[in-house]
Image (tube, rainbow, N blue to C red):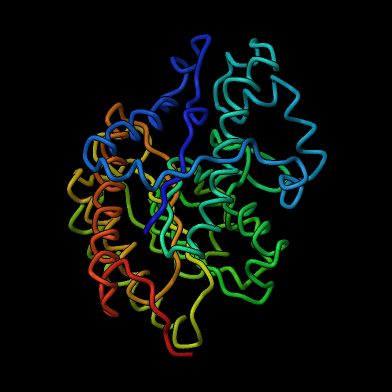
Amino acid sequence: MPRVVYDPTYNIGGYGLEKLHPFDGRKYGKAWDAVCTLLPAAKEWLVKPTGEVAVDNLRLVHSDGYLEQLASAAYLAKVFETPAAAWIPVAVLDAIVLRPMRFATQGTIQSFALACEHGLAINLGGGFHHAKPTGGEGFNVYNDVAIGIAFLRQTGQISSDDVVLYVDCDAHQGNGVATCFLDDRTVKIFDVFNADIYPRHDSAARARVDRPVPLPSGTDGETYLLELQRALPTWLDEITTRGRPALAIYNAGTDVVSDDPLGALALSPEHVLERDVFVVESLARRGIPTAMVLGGGYTPDSFRLVADSVATILGRASADKSQKCPPDSPLTPRPTSA
């Protein structure tokens, strides 16, 4: 059966910080409650993170110099894009923002391992795809995706030669993930993003994407889905003809929805759901273990979009499992020929 990773500690906020940034740091708990309402069985598949990510595991990706900078409120204010945060004691920022992110990062690590074991796992957080080895940006401090891959390699759960796929459908290009793997071509990157917005200045990161799908601001849902459906299956088939990847990671940012203040795209909630199901099922049909992380999303209803997708994906995956896993079922991992 699939697994979902979540802990209430994921939720970010306090001391009025949530009023200074459009991101709803409480959406994780709201999403989990909504998932349980839509799909009560999800409670049976819940796995809680074992605690905060260990510092040694942060060091698998991030430099000591960068981690030391996180003791500066002024520096964190730049990362959070919230100047007023510079006046909040750093101990408070650590407690209400960084600690939740460390829990979510541990959740991502565990979701990767669970995906390899069960075929599908969803971390109800994470997707901090702008954080780089030597710096944070875009409200992202720890690159949980890169840390999770490095941890699985270090512990031998996947080898250094195994191919890992990273599929990013957040409205913003995942420049941090691309930077972490500039010189590592075993990680294959597919990214659908708004080419007109941040981080459009990061040309090196954009050039690293193996299959970019840049879209203009205002792209509607039908066009978005058409471009995704044209590009992703072909890319996956090209890769899987050479063997099955060890893991796929899907960043399912909801900031593509039409009323999001930062994404500048125009998908409806129905389009977001269709996108998420299409990506996860495309990976599962090719027998690729898949872990999903949440990424960005800056509307008050982002949690509803998350819940609809997570409940639908989990429900379909569990239904396939209960039907004895017929070999061509969506969301049912199966081996592919080399």
